[in-house]
Length: 474
Image (cartoon, rainbow, N blue to C red; front, side, top):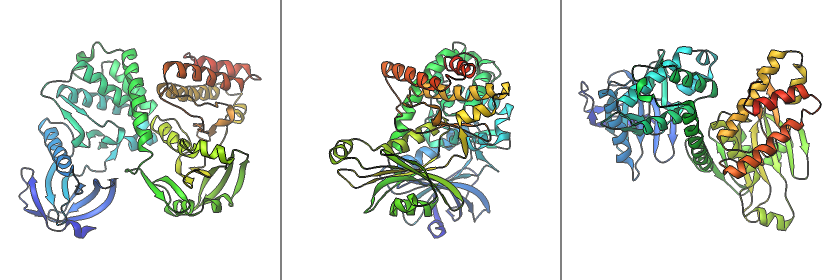
């Protein structure tokens, strides 16, 4: 790969960089957008300097893309906003254009930072984020592709990434634009971090420009978040069904489907070559007319494979006119992941044949946990743990509400709790989101009724769940 980046012609450079050609020693791959862009760490051999490189592959929008990135980096620097400094734009012998920028020392994305316990306990981080957002808004700038991986944490400070997606104005953002951006940030933060962000936002601790959001209320912000979350979920649902940075499609004589690029390659190959070999390993969890579920291990990790069995011929024909349940479960799992609802991580799905469609398979990571009802019985004597459990279930219920989503079968056996007291929701065959008001209200009532039915023999915890899911305290 490094031969691609030897002696590249420098097209543009930042002040202080006098190089006319530049060579890179390529490091780790960071992101890939197939056919469009590759992002990786590297070292400029001429300067012995660590950098991050965005390499734009030849395509119709190549010039537009690299110019927006380079221009965005320069504008952020001119406005005095924290972001990687621009170094140079280079072209290699195959026509690829590389935007080279400074590498932030020991940087991790905000999403990665918040996954760590220390990151979640960093009470000062959200104050820094709110202050930076205020600075952006006053400077007339906003991120056009808002998500937690477009922010970085380095040396305890927050930095801006993906400069090419920024929108810049010659005046501070309007109240409407600020609201939209704040809603987008809230929708991308994990629930605990979002709570801290909003607390800081409304406590006037954020910075010197809090007067610019005097008319902002919790209710107005929440309404904007709900609207945005539904839109984000619809877009992401579509993204899960095509090639992109996160997912790749596979088709062979067995069938066709999509898998996560981060998945174990050996497992993915075995799955698409012949999923029945995996169904023959491990232990059977469920044998039914509709589906068969098997748990097995691969390279030291446990997985669950769900096979949707063949139906009679005319049922196959009818069902072939709509997406398979395996495909819907795959996409729904990733939508829940986007909304911070813990569920089994989707690995891949595959549909057999063309028309009529044969069997379908959904492969996911196994959850090392116990059923919700069993867990609840085990902590029944600990009021604090029961309250924590009720709140965890309530947060998931809130997230489903933001998605305007209905699970469709919210019985206790579709919830699990692991040893860290983390609650998971699964079995997404009937999951729907982005519903109209009428459909959402009807489905929501049915979901709540089905969930509370589980606790008829334990009215105390049933009432606690009911109060929390109705909007009250446990």
